[in-house]
Image (cartoon, rainbow, N blue to C red; front, side, top):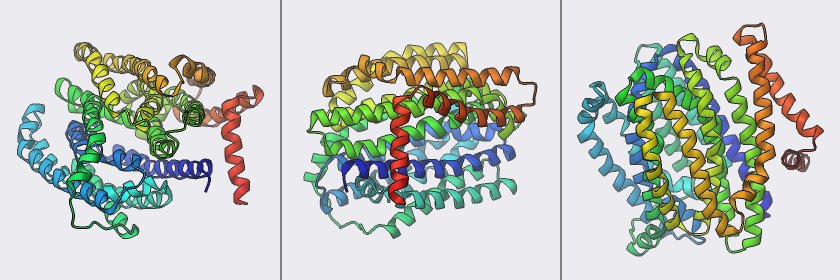
Length: 481
């Protein structure tokens, strides 16, 4: 199978995987939000940073190291498998030991017991990391899609039933655990790989040489991305954090999922041509332009419909989330852009530079976070937008040097997609202000007018990036026929 065709199929199935499973998560989240209160979501948000940092330790950069290595042996996979399990057990007991102190820190005693149970997710997740890595390395997202979708549906049903029967925050905890148990079990059943009882120090040193720098940079990035949960939970309230987490999850449905899809497919495929500089640059340029056309269109659309969307789906008790969502969409715009630039560093084997940039960026960001603590949650979000701009300037400068595609050229390539997305978003926002209807009716009108506006403007202007995506989609449809 040609690289372009393999990449396209990988992108399609990765897109389907993320957006179907996240679509189920989205629907389940809406139902749970109508049953539960903002405070209960806020309690889980307080624990997010501890689980996220622990998961980064469990992976330790080995996933990307295995994907990048052209010929991985059974010894390599088995070594990483036993490392993953060992570190997850150690980290679980650390979380268990400090769970009470974490509850005291947030002045929420219930958090101690919640963390002891939720921490089990580290163990369940670690046992299937290699199976998932192998499927990703093979660009086989079709199987992952089926497993993710089934796990999301079943765990969602479990969470909703528990919420209806009055389990409160525990319905969120057990829903998360159920999803991991199901997906890990199905990955073991569906894939042929099984570990050998071997641990090779030579394999460990080789893979960790690349992965260790990604581990440190991953820890820094994870801590930064989740520090807002900790700050809001500590200095504001669990209810305020609940509003923020709901808005952040709505934003992530689009921005983070686009980022995950692109990263999952672009890293293994670009790694195959990492030594052909001209071909790598050309492939990356097409990927950047296509990705940002989709990202700008979707994120400006989401910002414009935030108020009608929150009211329609979650109800009036969650309306405070809408003002946060409007601003967070401008943060989400930069996620795929920064992820693509950082992927170039990994593809070229510069995990050392990746780490260096993460340290520089986070040092720059600290004062902005401190200011936000004193000025409020919206000030924190404005700081996140500024941070994202600075991150792009830094990331694109270094990645551009590696492949001859500087930041100025990247901006020039995506500026018309930005203008198109902003224009459509502005029109939709004006609709929400001037239309003499209720918020539910306005949302329906916006949902219809958004795609019509984007397609009409793109067709009339013969928009290059839109036509490229359109051609790929239609070519794939005709090929199947």
